[in-house]
Image (cartoon, rainbow over the protein chains, first blue to last red):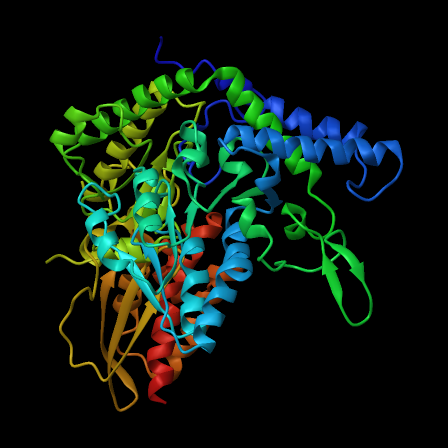
Length: 420
Length: 155
């Protein structure tokens, strides 16, 4: 295997008339789009588009079938047993807010009315999308928001988790992979611990789904959410997986057409199943793009993707560690790297000694290198680690060793300019 | 410590490729005026750019309606730091009214590309490089909005 990306040519953004010299290291924010996906969206919109689940004519029925088939494709992609457990929405943020409103709030409200204390548990690494909905619910129902500490390695401290869960814990919400640290939590183990306390689990899979086979059945979580655009699909399309037995008791998140079986001016009956959470018209172009992205990854195969990404991540981490002014947020222990050499994060957040991260990002941008700078929607995590902001570099399928070399050269130039 | 105003003007032009980080601006970043300066502050305010993490405190000593001393503190990027440094360098000795009027002009020049004229144009020329970098304007503006908060809090 060479160090070059065999898939870079699939991404039109690197073509000569677009951005041939772009060094894109911000895939954790959004992945660039392969031509396969863009073409699928274009072809759907041009030649197949109609409103799904509504029309009685063939064109509409075809689109309905497309959407229902997409549920099966997505279910298979994340190891769910049935497409009935898949609901489409606008992305991870909406997915979490939906679950907070539809599933968790009624439980909290019920406990509150009965005068029972409640607590909600999250981890210290959470993205604001997996913090703010819980913060609001905690405030509204006078529940305690408990935060599980992270270890020096940047994953959830399981001993602390066990201490925090109790009979009054209404939900445990955690990210499968941190968008700042790039470390994977042992989701199966975490859900097992939660199950022992009869606590339902919500997994934010936004950063995890593009980096290896996800298996929600093995994880045995109650909910799993992710976005298409962090998976080389379009923006505005996301997925909520849920155990179907929960759907019955859940109330719809937003109200509108397509989710009711009967309506009069005083009351409404809602449909059963995943479509209860999909009011209005489906974002079919997004769903088509998501399916194509999944098929694109499937065609490449997870072993090939992982082999490339692990090699590249190791090169990235090794190259950065050689810079004397490089200050990573998390320093992987030599012991862990020796034990699990393939578990090198493909997302790294760091600072350069005495150089503000925004200056680093600006100077890298002047060399056509795209990175993220700031707190990456995880301000409390940065505070926990004692910094206000970091530079984040994250890898995608199109990256190769030359991108890492460009980043290192760019960082060196930035450091010399700002401190020399 | 040497201050930005004492930087040699003829340093090698190694920054030509980085339009945002001009020599004069970098000089303020590397040797800022008023940074961590101990003054007898009569008024101060804290300013934060939530999106980027710039966190700055501007302190002023006002005596008989004139700014006798200025200082700034905190963690910020080079653009914010240089902007604060220029502010500390050039506003000393002005009245509160003059400072507020000047602040309006500098803010307009940064956010709306309104040209500064006269002495101010010369004094704050290094900040003009921000014009072409819309996402960094907020960094240059922060010391000025924070200064206004400090002054308004007093009046």
